[in-house]
Each structure stands twice: as C-alpha cells, then as structure tokens.
Length: 431
Image (cartoon, rainbow, N blue to C red; front, side, top):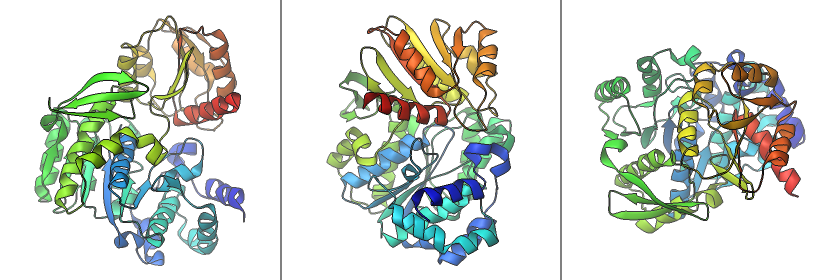
C-alpha cells in the first residue's frame, strides 16, 4: 500500500467517530489492551501527560509540547481530530508522523486489525504509542479522544493528569448533567498521580475532589492559583500578565486562551517536581512560539487582513459562547460568519448566542455526519440570523471574501471539518 491507500484503509475499514458519529464509538479498554499486548505495551517506554476536558485540551496539549520542546526534550504529541492532514494527530517535536512508518505499521498489523476489530481511534492510538516508543521520545502528551474513563487512551499511567474544563458535549455518551460528564472525565485520575483542573463549576469541583481523594491524588485548581490577564495584542501575539508579576508573549491570541495558559503554567510547575528540567526561558519560548514548534492550527488562526480572515474550531456551546465574547472585543465595520456544524450536536442553544448583526454563510463539510447547510440556514433564519446556504465550504468562504470590504471581519467556525476544508480552500486561493 502507498500512503493514500493506507489512509483509505484506516478511514474506510475501521469505524471513524468524527465522520460517522455514534456507530464508531467503542467505549472501554478491551480492544486497546489486546492491541497493546500484541505490540508489547510501547507506552511503558516513556513518560506521559494525559489531557482531558470538554474544551481547550488541544491548546493545552500543544502549549505543553512546545514548552517541553523548548526545554530540549524529545516530545510526542497525540491529538485528534486532524484538520487537513492525518499526520497532525501524531507528531514528534512538531513533525508529523513519517509516512513510511505509518504504511509499514498498518501493513504489519492488518491481521491484528481484522481479528480485534478496533475503531479508527483505537488503531491510530496504537500507531502513535508505537511510533513514540520506536523513536525513543522522552515524554508524550496524550489527548483523550472522548470522555476519559472509558477512552482507549486511559490505559496509561501518566506523570500528571489534566482536566481543562467541563461543559455539555457528547451527552449521549458522557451523560446529560455536569456531574455525570465530570465523572467520566475524572476517570483519568490515577492512584497517586497529581491532577491539575483548569476550570470548574460547583458540581464538577465536587466530583473532582471526591475522585482525587479516593485515588490519593494531589489535586490543583489552576483558576484559583493563577491570575492571567491580557495586557496587549500585537503582531498576532498576546502579552499576558501572570499573578501581577510575570509577563509572557503568547502565540495564540483568543481571549479564551487565558484559562488554558493558567492550566499550562500550573501543570509545568507540577511536572518540574517530577524531575523535568524546565526554565523560565523555556516557558516563555514555548508559549510564544507554540505554532512554529508544534504546527498547531485552527485556534483563532489568522489567514489575512483587509479584510481580516480568521478560523476557529469552537464547535460546542461553551466554546462558541467564549468565541462570541471574544468577537465583541474586536473592531470592524461588518461581520461575516462562515458557519457549519455536524448533525448530532444540539444547536438550539448555540444559535441563540450567535451575533444578530452578522451576515451568515451557512455551509457543511463533505462528510456524512455534517448538518446540511440548508437545514442550518432554516433553523438560523427562524431566530433572526440572516444568510445564505452554500453547497461547499469553499463556496461559502469565497462568497464571504467577495462580499467583505477591507475593514470587515470574516470568521470561519463550527465543525472541525468545516474549518479544515476552509483552511485548504484559503491556502489554495492564496497560492
């Protein structure tokens, strides 16, 4: 098989949650344990940090990787989903997985895949764990796929567990209350392993405290220990003030990143106690150069000025609400929003917080799970959000660019797949 044929096998032969939704979800560690037995448990050969949460886990994971890279460590990074290229999921020091390695791994494990019948996520996680071991990483940042307790990544015993926050998402799997969702996320808390919590509610905090006590795990609440303020934004970087004493420049500028930065800084403080050598200079370099060091995409990412053109992967109520609050701080003449979602999200609450003064370009990604643009348009129009539906994301982006004046603002957001297709279309147009 070549690279494209290998990816086609993974996408078409194995159930892919992000494409098909619930039919691809395989909770529990059964398949993972069987795969790890076949591979001789590669995740035991390096240190790990485990990151869960409803929103922000991607940003936190990339920040941590960047800081550890700046400190001279060889860092594996496993995240999902990808936006443009599968290789974004599995990186070492920012470099995507070697294509020949991926091909050989899949070829060598075809019999295991046919016997065990793993999901796409389980198979690619096994690929990542093996890749990190064969390349002798010092430490790997492992992002939870969905939930925590029953997620296939929960086979690891990390140096540190991190839970960024809890809000309503994937309620059909994780539960329909904050307590139920928090219980699933808290499943990554391991015996005698410290845990950092980024943001809590009264209900989620009680769950985390109880789980940490049962596991004899030291627990830290970043929001209570660190005050992070934005003091300046310049050249697509944000200057933050930490506890009224330390300034850092940060390479991601969305205001919602302030909470993620607090989580990251507290996490670095804890892992330094485990023996990792990380200086203030390393922290500053990692925060400022996170995009260059890790290849991170899709978080308040700028693709142009006159008009301003940004993309962001906010895709649930909590994330989009944060995004809307950030939009309120911007200066522009007219606002153009390219928006698309997947069909298994409850969008009723989301639509109610979206700006009514914007022109909308409703679209859907080219996947079966996408909510049709015409259906999204109908629901949005019914509550006063005005705009047209477009057959493709590329058409929607082009229409927004054609309609916008130089002092306008264009934002593409919603489904990760909408953002991914928009990035491809924007880069194609800019060639």
